[in-house]
Image (cartoon, rainbow over the protein chains, first blue to last red):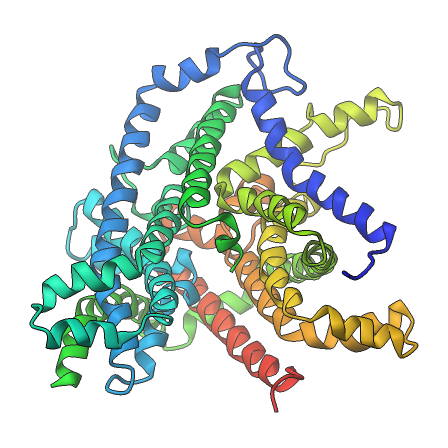
Length: 262
Length: 274
């Protein structure tokens, strides 16, 4: 038997979910409108604003850049984050306690401050290329997710399995790929997806690090909105939502969606 | 040997965070104390300016109101979600995760369509005759708060569902069978047990609102400048990097102070901790 809920609470919750999902449905409607201005409900159905995204070279370019940056920074974060998470769990006693706090810092420090500091003290100081700065900024942005999610899945890993493999003569790297990695597979997938989505959607770091010629999609959307308030932005938004749906479908297939609520 | 293995595995990530986060951010803060005008000049300048004080105060106000509303909405919603049957719970969690994974630009943009002069809300209000002329809703403090609440409610719900789920049904039923009215069960059993979760949620929402950029920029514009948008404007429009660094330092100090204060409070108020 579960606790009975008061009808007023149920009605309130229903309204909250209308509030949460409604605006996104409105964006989809606005994207499909045939008009040159933003309106809802859509007047006449058309996909012309989706075609318009790809007609504007700045959108084509930034979509590509955003995807590249998201893949690269996620890959880098996994590359350095997985060993770090492993060390934090396996050698907990040998390593100082502040180390795990260090990896939470990118969440604790406001993104805007990180973006500005990277621009001022790294990009400008060392004349770093824009693309490189973006990759560095985004890798740092997503690193905490990788360390945290992998750590969580390592917490239930029995390290004696690994020791058994090593004592039976398995070389360390082989042990890593055949014993450890398969056991934290779901953690790696979750970390990858969280990182990828976080990078694709980032504004606060990218706004400082993008520059002439190289920009990311959210920054290009902001720039476009300053000049035009047409349904193009709505259709780009729909593309981004489609990406989110795809990502959620992957999570659902591999881990089950309740995973995200943890 | 083990110590060496641990360090060597953790070192790439450690170095990355130290070199590209700790050092640059510390450098940004240190430069505000090394200006030719004297060590505290940028701060005297900041707090001496009526405009900047207004911006700081507005940011605190917007963040506090957003946090309180998000706590209220999030708590009730999370409670209902946590007590829903399995299939419905999954659907509701999906419905909360989806906006969370959708970017901040898209979610703010949705509210621009709704609140604009020719937007949906004005259209509906004029259409039904409630108001005669379209109202100015965009670029007001209310618009920023509504969009921020929209931004953070999913985060609050997902943070609290886990906490509320861990409160056993038995406990609530025991309270009821011992004669407590639903309201008493709520205030004396559920609420105290949820306090640590509420504090975590409040910290996430407050610090998130306090350092937000895209939402106040799109829905508040110049007239509703907050710390984040002011910092961007100082850094990238007027190129006053000392001023931008000062704002950055104030944001870091306030963020970290709130996180430390609230985590300490969460520990003290946790009824499960003995």
